[in-house]
Length: 212
Image (cartoon, rainbow, N blue to C red):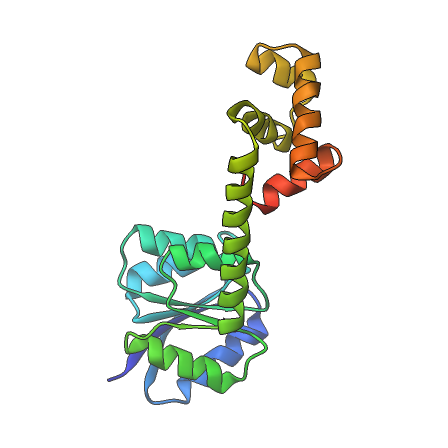
């Protein structure tokens, strides 16, 4: 059975290469190509391909936003993301929105074809290096959140979120109906409990551990 494809990449040379790669294999039929997120969604809605091979970095709606739209609209197309690199949070987001395949651009062309072939058969094919890093990141966040919950009071946790949001002591005091001196006292306690030195480190700590 022929697998119907839509290909999306904002680099013409890469897109042309992808098209040639799949057109020379009789198992695939390329229905359309796209160079941005808007064109991609239009092609998917019109053609209803079996598989969409999708670049993560694109204008007018990147690959992750396209993936989310397809997931939210419950379109039957299975998505294979093609990327030079992905942050751990992006991998987790892709998994949350039902990605079927993840392939690094550095991989051989045969790996992409094999991935698309497996996805068309209903098999999820995700680059293990990306998945391991993403899961490690998720565990780090869970441990960080657990540690913060164990050592911080509810009021201290509130202040951490406000500092990470860029609020100054005066703004925090007004928001919580307490004095600036009380905010400073809380901050010194927070720094000591979390082992950080100052607002910048506290903000980074909160962001890295998913506290905001």
